[in-house]
Length: 149
Image (tube, one colour):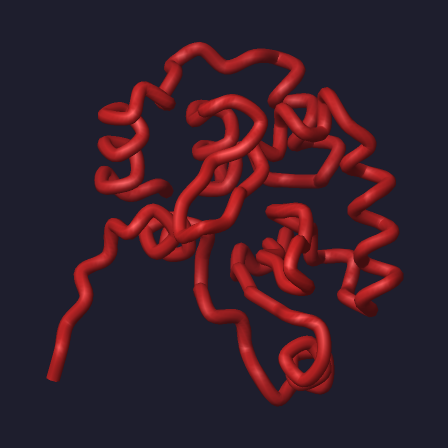
């Protein structure tokens, strides 16, 4: 489930919508996404155009992108090119030789970059940075508290 922090952030920004377009549900089904997941809850209700922008990076509005681009083809190409398992779907355009990927099976999110970063990840030497999509969104939108020692 999405945290109230993420939902309230989206409401304040004017991004949260209660009505769910049927084509967005179908877009997520094409990706084999559980419609009860935090990933689906976010993408079915939050929209600020084709992308969200935070931390100097764009994040796709996956449903919009699936409906209006060749995302599914691009997804397969990026999986093949980068050697990522099929469970990982891109959350952005991988500009600057790095990008976020969501694991459809576990809900984890990983940031990988070309070179040593992706090699360590593919070899199992590093793990996804976020255990679930909600944790990723809280980080991405700057909603997590930073503690100092």
